[in-house]
Image 1 (cartoon, one colour):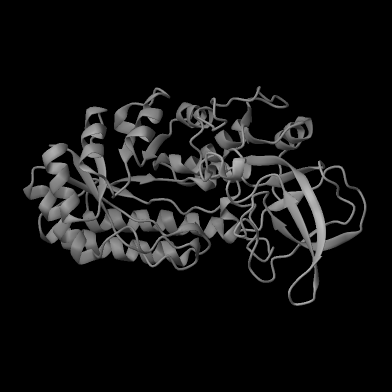
Image 2: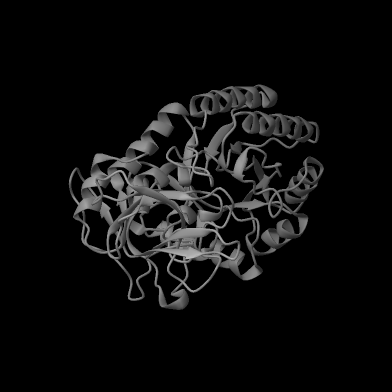
Amino acid sequence: MYETTNLRAALAAATEDQIVYDLPGIADRHDSLVRELPGVAVRFAMKACPVDEVLTCLAGRGAGFDAASPHEIAQALATGTPADRIHYGNTIKSDRHIAEAYDLGIRDFATDSVEDVRALAALAPGSRVFCRLATDGEGALWGLSHKFGCSPADALRVLSTARASGLTPSGLSVHVGSQQMTAEAWRAAFDRMADVLAALERRGIRLDHINLGGGLPALGYRDRFGRPLDPPLDKIFAVIREGMQRLRAVTGTPLDFVIEPGRYLVADHGAVRAHVSRLSAREQVSGERQHWLYLSCGKFNGLYEMDALQYTLVFPEYRGSDYVPAVVAGPTCDSDDAYSHEGSLVRVPRSVASGDPVWILSSGAYAASYTTQGFNGFGPLPYTWIRDEGDAAPLATSAGGRAR
């Protein structure tokens, strides 16, 4: 269970449902990453937590941003971060969005197809492009192996086309899969990048940077069966450091590195204060009697990743020992709003009552972004943040309740 003193105090003080972000904890996690990977530029993956106060906190530590749309670019610029510390990391871009990003000052674009390169040459002339290589996603909770990235052969075509089109072929990128649990995935990614770098050298194309993408794991997660996940973080960092040295040896020239952490920076330093809607017991079609714990938030307003994770629940007002196994579900009238996989029962207090508070730990990633405007009338969770020890700011929401 991952829970900081700051978060516990803020959750205990909360009387209404909300997400709480521990800004000092996020800053510390950023600083520890920089110590583990000296010289690597951090570009926070904004989709993980598009909350202005979190972005400003990270910008103050020297981080830049991995943005996936003109709206995210504008939000990143609003923190005071210069455009040269922001890249358009989405390989999927319409002509209109390319032009808007270029007008906002962005000159670094991810790509993975010749068609995208041609659009960039026409609408973002003179820009720098880095090509995303596909990975198999093995070892990650979310593999990300289908929608993005290209083969090594395609990467050669993409970057050669970029050079011929007046763009600067500047880098390679990978993503080993979100919440990557193995060091071997990183080693395989470096193997692939080394081969592509060597092939590019033979074509006279010399890159200036490597983007290591996302995938660094959060530390406080449980898998969908409730087993604590224990990522080999020290080994992962060692493999990354060794891989960086190897790629620099392949090129024989200075080579910069960028990394795009998302959940690694924010997941464990954010938590949800929710409440119990109801604990009930119903006989199922099978004839088995099953307990169901309905919470005030679920898949559509804060806990979207419940298909792959079993969030850690804390019942702060309960001190007994009488627990029952229950299916955990959100409040909406939708059957998908529940832990639906076999073996995913959660032990909950038998005496828990409607209105009792529940703390949902290690939920700082995607709680503010994977959410609907108000499915079934259940709106996005408002949020608050901790600036210093024991401090929690007033709630900050837009008119519609969405974090901004």
